[in-house]
Length: 366
Image 1 (cartoon, rainbow, N blue to C red):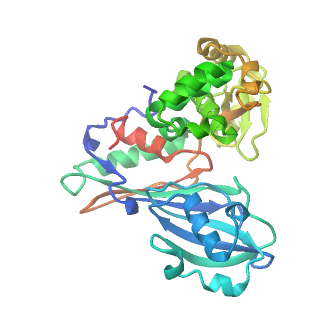
Image 2: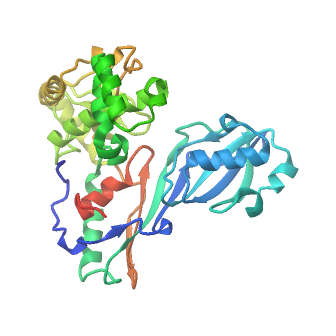
Image 3: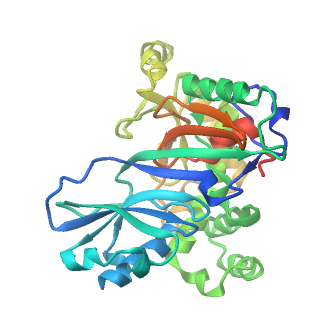
């Protein structure tokens, strides 16, 4: 049970449904840069519905006569949604691009635009994502006052920042990935093998390095969420000993004392900087002072050390720092009609729209 940043009453949203239909959850990638229009790489602006990014890549690659791994993507998008994003392939003949029609691609996938660029699209090469989310209610229209409450919540998040919690998607069904990741970090391969067999996962994935990495990341994310929860609600306030993170490039530096905290606070208020928390690992610097005490207490309670994340069983995670809060990239909007409420907001890459929805709907999202 993680604390909320906002203190608004949520009863008016009881029974609100999210993703009742794919078109109720629209995600549009915000590119870090636009394709130049020239180069050897074809950039495809796609729209997909009811399928994940890997499936879309596989279908397009097959039509183009390419391998899945030839594709460049900046981010992975949900299946239960309508999403738009760039995908790149190098050395694609124009006549093959012309074949990318609905008949060739099949249902739920279309190419909206084609351009060119000089390099392959790389994972993480995106500014963020824009979300347009419809909340449906049993009565159709939203309850009285719901739209105003939604505007107030989003306005508060715009002013103070969104808690940078990892969403439940990170942890697997029933949060089972966290326990499996902990066993890998502890280096207990026998216990991991036994727990993995009982988890319902495909047994073949037990030795898959990428999947094991995902499990350890889930454990790291759980510990980060615990640190973040203990820093609520003043996520934008620097304390002596904090490690400040520069949003522009991820650089980190220490807030040495109270004078430094006071000096840097205006930059935090302008969302240039934010306090950060640890994704624990042997190369992760920990904060000092009160922030450092929290980080060390969470780690001690977990039963592992930072060095344990460097085990070969744990896929040798180096660790990192992550901002405790994130800004809304655009002014949020709320509208209402006979079918419910429509929310529009944008988040940086790596942030979870479900965390924004949680501030509005509470933990009982449908």
